[in-house]
Image (tube, rainbow, N blue to C red; front, top):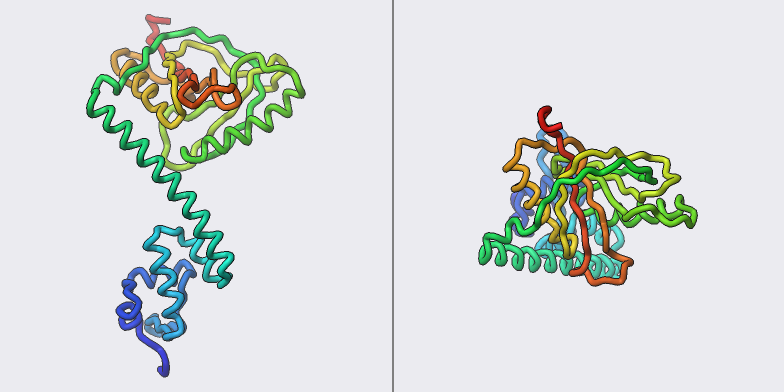
Length: 265
């Protein structure tokens, strides 16, 4: 057909593999000019070289497909600048995360004892009333969910001081997919009652992204007992954002509810 390149030639001209071109077609990012209804063969026009080059360059920078789709749809330099600025912020956050991981990894390799630095104690916790909000979020969305949830809960308090520190509940098993999360604020007139019981508690001081040290301590402690986790784990935020302390001074208690053997009850 006049002016049409088969996918193999278009692939070579754009330096984008045929498999990737097929994936771009299926996602609606770069659709072929024609598709043979009988064979399914794809054909592209030379005018699509520009779009292909934009896609290839932006993917090399790890720009998400949704953002690239926005750039191509707008064909507006202002939109392109905004999308790239947003991506730059994501990359800076990723760089900070990588630097933190390198720092923690180096510390763990240099000082193996740092794997379980937190002391663990057992504690009986009474049930209490609270206002609570439950939602679903991924790990990297927990902070945003909790911030929004606490704003909602503070409105429910109606100016009455909370009866304890803010907290959150997470599943007893860590999940890669979005997981249920409950934010709560203790209050005598709260509409939700959180159960009490026997808990293993690890105190942690420091930024939230480094709190895995407290979880490792609880895991090591649990491995030396006959206990199991009896339900959602709790994080109690004794000092945190809004308390006028730096992140290094944040204080959190990680609480695992325990299922005890019958002869220990």
